[in-house]
Image 1 (cartoon, rainbow, N blue to C red):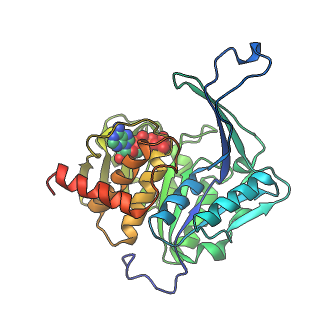
Image 2: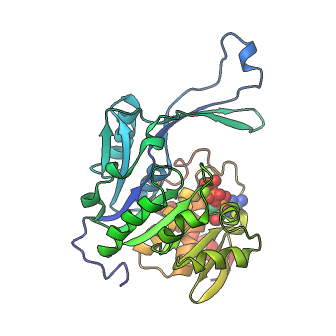
Image 3: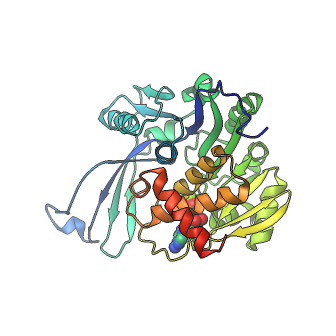
Length: 327
Ligand SMILES: Nc1ncnc2c1ncn2[C@@H]1O[C@H](COP(=O)(O)OP(=O)(O)OP(=O)(O)O)[C@@H](O)[C@H]1O
Ligand SMILES: [Mg+2]
């Protein structure tokens, strides 16, 4: 069944499951920060972040009914996240407020030349999010489940993902998933069964290498395909993406003439663009192009959700793509 044939009774197009956090970037700081009594920076402000939050924001801006499943604390940072969701028209019924945890806040220290480190709360919501926080009834309301990143919330481990994906599959949902590098030394074997449920998997090349132990692009993608992933969509940075599915393999090149100034969130924007294109009924090649276009806008702006403001921006980039590649 294609996404278009899916029941129109579904209340949501997509549900994004994963982390919703608050980021506080501090820049510029120098390495001798502790030698100075009071350290002035140009700006200190909160912004929302987290894989599920970023994806939900972009997919909603691209015109689709989007919900989010995440947990937050009963605190000011949590309220800030809820307010941001409302502003971007994201359904927040799947956000669980857990009074026993702090909403995760990441303080990013960035030097003048772009070196960065993060101070994070090891007991924050990102580390505590677990299956108890997953509202299955809310999840079932969507056509697509986007597991924003495997390994990001460590308690959503391989076994837990199988439980979640089974429910999604039973309810006819399409399942997509991105990943980050394992935080606790997890391996491919830990998520092999979970991957067998995934229709669209969006690792980047480095992550996919780490997971498979291979380095040659074709072999890396083959190994993930052999786990039962229907479509491996491996991101290869400024080269675009590498697709492997039952029809074979192909590279879909990235947008031309792009000067990347901040690639944080490029992956989230890529997944968002891909999912939006699926919902528009596009084929896999067209979805990959749309994903590249969405990510290309993102990398030209600082911040994960500052670049893509609406669908028109992506459509404009798509027109340029078609001209550049004579499509
Ligand atoms: N220099 C660039 N020019 C054009 N497009 C780019 C450039 N860099 C990245 N992109 C686009 O962004 C997509 C995602 O980039 P990348 O491979 O870095 O993903 P990622 O590592 O998952 O990102 P993230 O750091 O957000 O996790 C690429 O597939 C491509 O479409
Ligand atoms: Mg990524």
